[in-house]
Image (cartoon, rainbow, N blue to C red; front, side, top):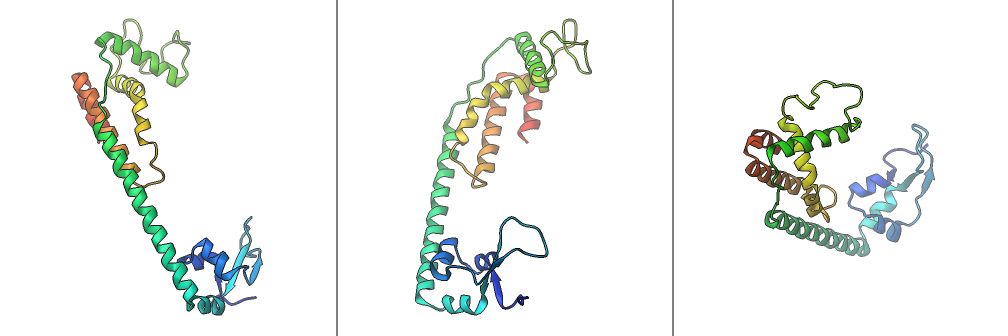
Length: 200
């Protein structure tokens, strides 16, 4: 079998700074290709002779491809940063319009929404369960009311479109969450504590 120091895997090439395109263009087919006997995998193992890899890495062609890959990577990072800034600006600028409902109506809608989400039949089904709210019951919990309002305001999630992967998405989601829950708390002061808890 081949020694570990004699061959480089495809993953090893990437760790050395090779891109998929550089491997295709400069190395071509692997020197050894087959199944890894130590573990089952659908993808074949591709091994490249280390001496051949090092020889190619000393050529001007490799230096040119490596520089071009670096420029492409920098351009991709700059594009991702522009998208991130644009989405953050849109999230900051978009007015969050919370529907204003009388408290009793909000509670009624919150209960109905909770039943729909939990799959409970519209009439309440087989009797009240734990935390059930109905005629003569206490008011809908603040959490249910916030859930309903957050559902109504879910259209604002479309502001995050265009952010892929982790590039700025967590930051944009946090900002949107803070703005939405802040708007709910201003519209319904009795929900401020629950909104503050969720925004954190």
